[in-house]
Image (cartoon, rainbow, N blue to C red):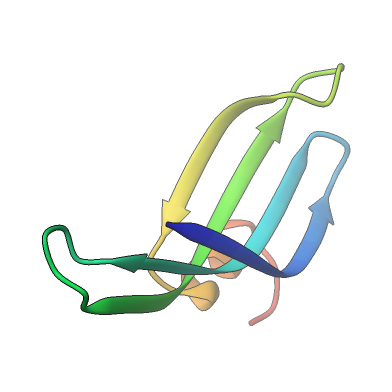
Length: 69
């Protein structure tokens, strides 16, 4: 299981959108899975994530953050 960052976008002072590739193998098999995935992270003052939302496409994440796709 791994994530490869493709693009990180700051939205305001406490929110970040991450566009990543999620890679894994189906449990019990050698079948690989690779899928783009979007995330929106809410950050505390110390920079640690306090909340994260996952999206199945990059466009969904960008739209949810109010950014152009």
